[in-house]
Image 1 (spheres, rainbow, N blue to C red):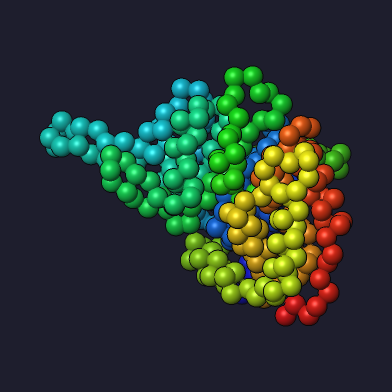
Image 2: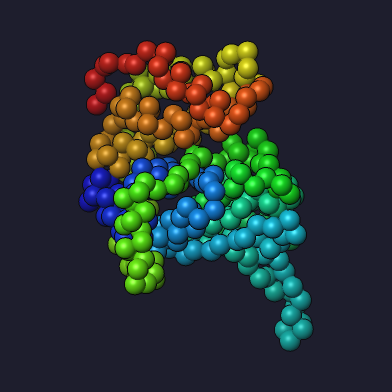
Amino acid sequence: MTGKEFGQKIKENISKVIIGKDQTIHLLLTALLADGHVLLEDVPGTGKTKVAKSLAASLAADFNRIQFTPDLLPGDITGLTIYDQKKGEFVLRKGPAFTNILLADEINRATPRTQSGLLECMEERQITIDGETLPAGEPFFVIATQNPVETAGTFPLPEAQMDRFMMMLSMGLPEKNEEVQIMERYMKGEPLAELKAVATLEELAKAKKSVENVFVHKCILEYMAEIVGATRQGENVLMGVSPRGTLAFLRCVKAHAYLDGRDFVTPDDVKALAEPVLSHRIIMGYGNAGESKRMVEKILKTVPVPTEEFK
């Protein structure tokens, strides 16, 4: 099975529940195959939770959801050891982070201490409880959400936390015809309840292994390095993309090429992934959230595109 076939059957399955968000679903799959995590920033009710549940159902993966609130503690995420009076010993109670796909809902409503509880899980794929380190899950994919409008009482994610998200995406609101399709689809029930798995975690593991073998020509690496280097320049730039961001960029373009059915990366892969992978890693001195996105768009227009044979 090719990467294009693998991605297509998952996207078609998710489209039974989520309508008109093919690009977002494609990028979610890209991040999953690139072994990263995704931050979904959008207003409530756009389908962020449903897309996470649909992805888990399509892969027959374990799924857990955490509703982040100001009183949530790190132990509520990772778990803790409690004393069992019947056994006369301490027993480990695993938290919801021990899963395959974890939805961290409204992550910016929790305190920085609790937000940091996800850091080790996301970066190391492991969880430490009372000195004991355990694997989180294989695969382990975090989809975090936040509402960009209602910010009262929230704790903005620090740069170190933002940098650990491979991509920052937005679901967006549907067009008129898509909204009509949504109403027709949900007229007689909940499509998510009837969604069946179309792939296994073993197939996903094989696909991730295939992504590692995707070829990247040196001229593409140089093209990517020029784009990343340009994000670190400019009088309004406080901080550009870090080397961690560069490596995330590399893994993403390889996964994107794989999902397109190719075993080599082209400049089009780089252009498609630059904004969702790089823009949230750029810290501007002033301006709104869209300033970094406009900066990436400008960089893509100014950096020369390689024209060599990429295979």
